[in-house]
Length: 172
Length: 276
Image (tube, rainbow over all chains, first blue to last red; front, top):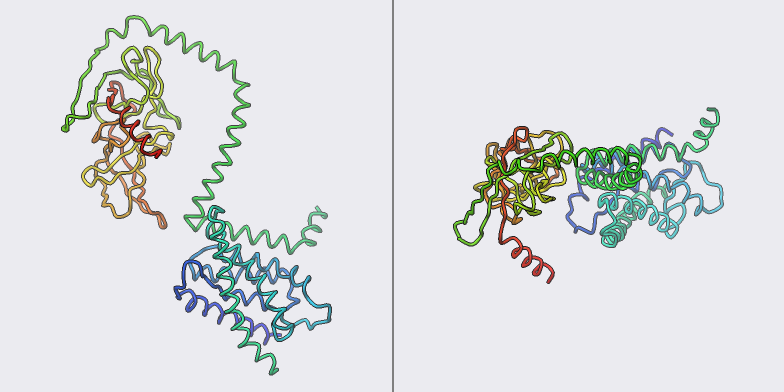
């Protein structure tokens, strides 16, 4: 159990470092701002208690906010994502018994399922984030365009990360 | 009480979410200048909507008092009407600027009522229609800009004071010619704010602020005040400039009304070309 939590802490640190040190420094375009750190919340165990999930979402968002100098914006977006997660998981999880430590990852549920799940999570996060950043609905469609484009790139990056960690779980 | 606690425990997930989201929004609004500004703007719009509605209703309750005040004011004005104004010096002078095109006519007047304590301050001047005072003429004193005429009767006129949060005056920095607008924040009768001066302008305390002449109300170069303090908030694209007024609004008595004879022509031309 302690081993597992250490794994997640390590996971979070690596993701935050990749986000802050590499991805934030790649000038893609105004429309494309991928965020990879949300894959930490996405891949948390299935049956993690709700309150703990929210706290983790809050802390993750806060860490990114502190390093990106955007107080509150990522926190709010990550919270919304953590809030939606249990409801959405309940509705799409196959009706079988799962271990309490099982993770919603491609190696357990399959690639198609994971794609659907990660897409909804990423869209919910990006939607909240970019509209808070804009703070008005006056450029509604250009913001929406930004949300969709960035989500596609974020998803791509999350898949790449999953490929790396996916092989590990298969070996085990 | 027990029910409340049971409710909280039952819905602890949603309650915690709302709580943490609130904290996040407090962060957003208190640390990001752009988001804070738009939040305050929209909440002001909501406030003023309700304020207008409620004052529409409340006004009915004070009709009796308003009537009495108006009757008293009428009596006061009537008592001031006869003769007394013929004693005051009536003069008129015509100024031609260096290009010999724009003509400004100055007419003298005396301030007979003046407030500085409210948020919307007005002056009353003892000249009206019969002395050719018209709406939207500028009011200046020998020290600088005082206000703009907003209403006239046959023997009196009222002017919006510079110390009125609804008034904006186009102004510029003497020398560098960067222009912005003068606004009052409703706090001190000695200070106003100069906004919209861009960051690449050079502004120092002691610089003189004068009218820009863009509005066709005031001639160019009438003094407004002296720059007292220049501050720059992170995230703003304009300076915040505090200007000490050159006019002492507490002791103001004799003023001049400025008439720009080419004003109608300028406005006509501008409205034509802006509508194209």
